[in-house]
Image (tube, rainbow, N blue to C red):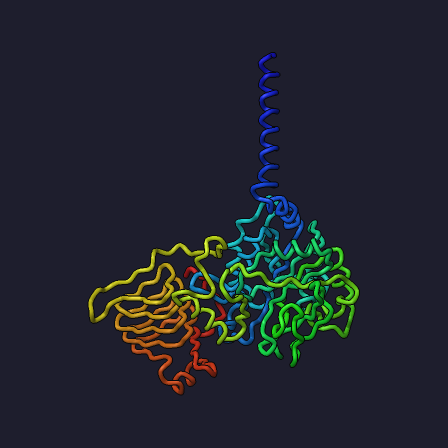
Length: 451
């Protein structure tokens, strides 16, 4: 046999061996592999519309200068990073981030930390209000998506995920899309089962049949209907939706023309379509892998504070250190955190705390606290049960307890916060539970995060 033909035959033989081996792996060693391939194709056929324009009124004054999704979380992150990490970990690589309210810091953060997906048809792209089909600001969640219908229609997609950028949870959206495709659904709604007494007047509650098809919906009912799958629990809406693109567009057009609509997915779209289309619920599968399901709407100061304080526990419910489900963000180029002075009179120490890069605990004590970038706790200070944002300076001999200190705040020496409620109320915002929020002086100029 001529040399070239012999070489060609060898290549063909090896190709056949590889094909046979691949089939063996599929059928014998990893039977789930074959089922995983189609859904990866489906993920490439999906786009995400991430709603991130929320004002977050209940988080005021932390949202005085920023949108709710841009509020810091866990020293390194912004709230929006959690949902964006879910997207990337799930294989969703085409994401429109819809902004509106005070979006400068949010846009900077997404641009700096998430623009690396650009190229090869992948992107995480900021979409401010464009006034293309309306002259109004976004009137509701459905209206926000409708006003970007041109951008959605310009993408070749079979499925559209509608997500919120202000919740804390870990979720593999590929599993949700797999159910959506397998059930032949037109729309799938993410739900989480919670006790009925906790859902009363708090959540939109979805009624399902034995096949998880949605047959009813109530917005914050006083007496939520129990789930047929788990007595004592109800199916609360997570504000997560998958729509078939060919159905979403006409639904949005019809809603935009309805003068009586609130233009909201929960209040208007969902109740209108459940009788006419195949709408299913997807029961939340938690990638956090703890005993209890973790999904938090950190929409109030108290809920936000508790979610951060959980992170400093020895075994927190929400795990930041899970390498199987990494949380991504834009990390500043700061030096390592530093703890100085071994002097017994002013020892620099931090216990049961999270401390980000560039921070220096210089002769002070930090306990059960979350410290962001470039924070300085000076000598003879005591900081406990607190959240300190980036670029905070705590002057000598100060005491801070149960407080949230916003970025670029410089506390003078001998400052006391969290010890005298009446004095705190005269200077700062204090919640009913006693959490003190200290913000910098209001300014017309947004300081760069690296300043």
